[in-house]
Image (cartoon, rainbow, N blue to C red; front, side):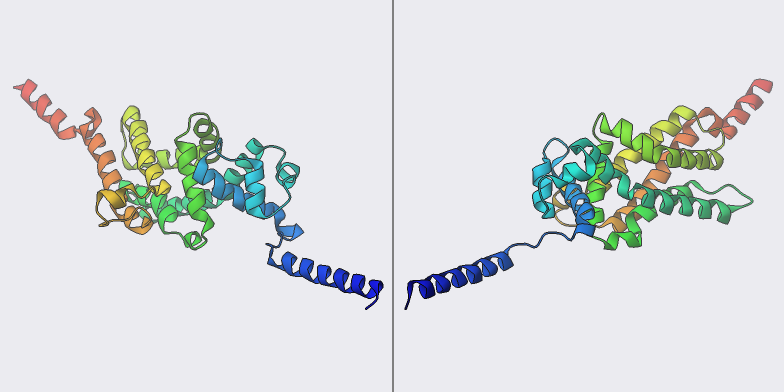
Length: 257
């Protein structure tokens, strides 16, 4: 065999081996999907490790894109974090606002019940069809992280969710006329804490209950949370001076004698 022939066989074999090795590598995301791939990867990483525990390089590696692309599309890690949080917020707001409008309309000409309002708030979150998409578990964990983190919570939760929350608070005022405002806001604060832990799905209740209940069973969580939170608001309403007309009436009669 000539030297040229040997060299040709070697070159051809190298090309074949290179092709086989390349085929085993993970293919990069198509150009049109790279931005979405980065958002998906960032959502999973931020929800698992928080803002400070993640780098743009880690996100790029998980998304299967060049390390420069997260910066190219989003500019900075902070802007990427905000973009991830923004992406699904409107979906949740639209679902809950539609449920609230329906609850108010169904009760007319009366005010909606406290339970109907709380259910309109929780049920779309914990039983919606959108939950069939796996990415929502990561997003819910991210919302729980943001709501429980000074700085992020005051900024992102206020910007994206407070306008809708105020509509729910107005509905609760209709259901509980004369409700003490301090009790109303502290009641919502307790409600928000229960929601945050529910969204986080930490698995703690699984261990605590020896497997009797699961933190990822959001439908079951909904059915227990709604009456519990409803009872809390109604108890606060009964305890307020305005919520005790019978007691006031009795005092008036007693003083008349």
